[in-house]
Image (cartoon, rainbow, N blue to C red; front, side, top):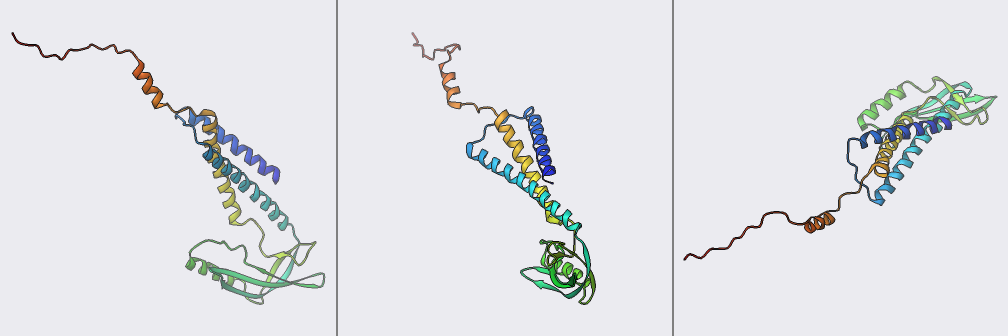
Length: 212
């Protein structure tokens, strides 16, 4: 997955440079101050990190999908109110005669209005009543580690989208200002040049003639 992440980063940068090159043909680009270049470089690095990290998490999700499964039982199911509504599913299961327990929120998203979250959390909890049988995915090396739901979560794709957006925008602006920007005209030098030019106009006399 790390190779895929690096490939996505490289493609994103290449596309951004091409876009900047196309923009430079139609727009006059001024040079940016040094501090702003530092900010843009920081944003580009942050964007690359936000692209790389989700791919690492996707690799972990892929591993979780290959974990063995065992039948478990729900011991408690309720909606908690920790600043916002969350479904909490507690369960127990056995592996090789050893009893284990776990807790899951089923990858419930961390955004949304209070009322909508409450309704969604109650809907999730209603599907897992105490005593119900469930499928538990557990770590074969550490059976005490388990999950109920496999697959990528919404925030992985959110981070990936944000990272690509940051990297594209910062790379475009950096490319434009580093390679295609031109020096702004110096107004003082232009004024001095104008004053030093010889005057070629016709001089007029504004004297009053005396009448005889």
